[in-house]
Amino acid sequence: MGALRGEHIDGQGVTESRWSTSRQLTELPITSVEQLLGNTTRVVVVSPHPDDEVLGCGGLLAMAVASGRPVLIVSVTDGEAAYPQEDAWPPARLAAARRGELRDALACLGIDPAHVVRLDAGDGQVRAGVGALSARLSELLQPTDAVLVTYARDGHPDHEACADAALNAAAHCGARLLQFPVWAWHWDDPDHSQMLASAVRLALPPLAHAAKMRAMAAFKTQTGHVTPALRNPILPDWALARFRRHFEVYLP
Image (cartoon, rainbow, N blue to C red; front, top):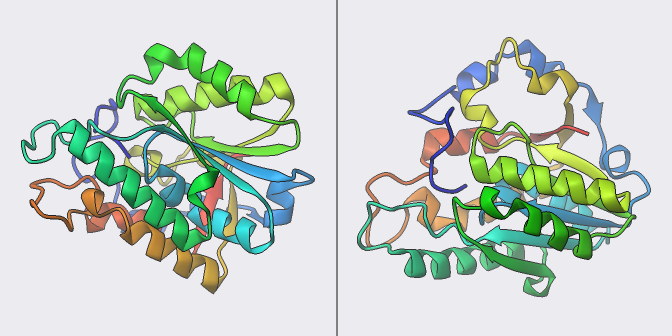
């Protein structure tokens, strides 16, 4: 996640307790890794900020690694603009910390740092370079890839710009594309969700879920478990609750 600049993102949003009683969510069609990934041979995640790849699809990544499927993480920004009001966490310091957190988190999922491509786009500025991002993704992607990216209407400008770029690049090379929500859980309507109308639900086996929980805990600058202390961490407990589920949601 990055700095909260999306038009839908304010306050604590929709609580996990409300989502847990959503019939739309609980009655989603069940899918499997085999159905989601089909005959693709590599998983590529286009992640706007360090932590989006774990929050949205960390369980699937752990399952892919366990099955021997190669994984590539395209880390679009370093998330350096998350705390503009925190003098103790200027952009350069935060960027370095978040890169380290990403390495630690991916290690929990079994992903080597060599399988991360950093694009160094400006946090909060992805939309301005969406054409260049699409072109770079077209260079990285292969027709046999399964490309995972944040939901195209996620409510955060960087998330939506990454989705647009990935959609274009995947269509250009013929790769399979899957979207996953991150901030949409904050603002969407649990009872009348357009997003869930075309979504599927992937159950996470215990080992994959445990790996995802360890990976989430690595993002200490986002959860607030750092010194100097953060006044308003982006991922307090009420936000993390949406990603502790024993399933993940995808839009094929």
